[in-house]
Amino acid sequence: MSAKKTYLNWSSGKDASMVLYETQKEGKFEVVKLLTSVNGHHNRVSMHGLRRELLFKQAEALGIPLKLVNLPEQPSMEDYSKLMGEAVSDLKREGFEDCIFGDIFLEDLRAYREKQLAEVGISCHFPLWKRDTKELLNDFIDKGFKAITVCVNGELLGEEFVGREVDESFLEDLPPNVDPCGENGEFHTFCFDGPIFKYPVKFEVGEKVFREYKAPKKDDQHNIEKNMGFWFCDLLP
Image (cartoon, rainbow, N blue to C red; front, top):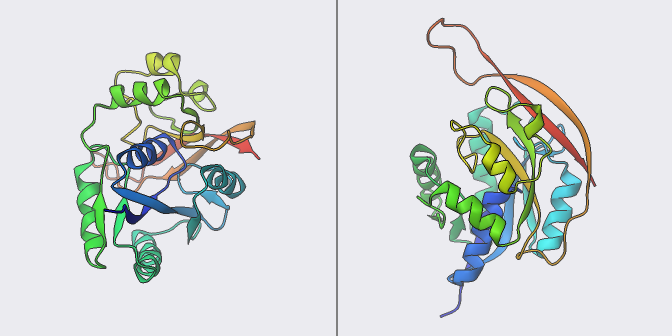
């Protein structure tokens, strides 16, 4: 039986890379397209802050076509759902009935994805689901993947953690309240080499900047708007 035509929700980071590796190794699904949301105003990958040019270079090194979802500068949940829904409907018309996610343990996020995609007749698959995140990151490193942090949550990690390669010493230095894979949004990465790549993606490390954003929820204790701060490391093509 031939592998099923599938698209993968591509963040440009380590979890997406690992789940692509696992999917290709298993052979049940054939990933023939990557789907990525980008901030159309800044031309960067959402949350990661990665330049669009590097995203395309990464897809070229993987040898898989890329489909972009262009989001506004500050998208609402309604904006996101609408634009993502349009992109998924396009994929459905192209014959896609299955998709892959790199989520590991966020139950509410998985339920949201499954509900939204079931409405258009697409099945979700989570090959990394419930894997031990420390073991997963060690496996990522052992298999020869290379990744660098491009964004870290300033409340949990300092400037020294952004623009840093993900290796054994990185894992050892993480505080105990930070998930080894950053599954709670503690950090985001750019994967530039590994067994899924035809060749390494070349880039230069640029400046580090700190940015604050309005938190999606109010501070429950004081009923005030709360800001969230993130360190970003700009990578140059």
